[in-house]
Length: 72
Image 1 (cartoon, one colour):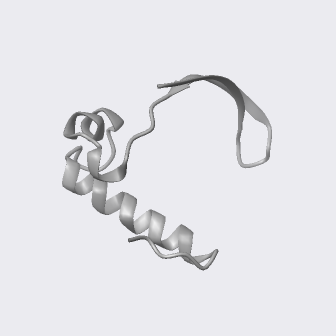
Image 2 (tube, rainbow, N blue to C red):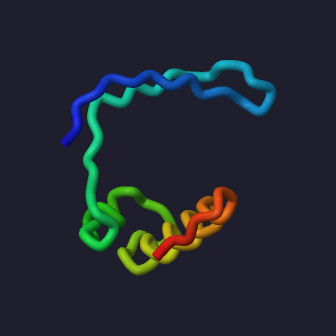
Image 3 (cartoon, rainbow, N blue to C red):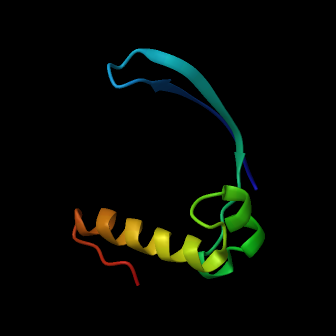
């Protein structure tokens, strides 16, 4: 676990501030080591690990392509 304190201002579509989110710590894990419990807790898609991984691979691949990288 990495301890940090970070504040982020969340805005609406017109850049009006709506709330502040405080991050107080982060966990760093190797992609292959992400647990089914984490995928379920994150709560996206159907909340299973296979769906979580497929979504992350698709998102990361598209994002990385913009800077000339490949997700492997």
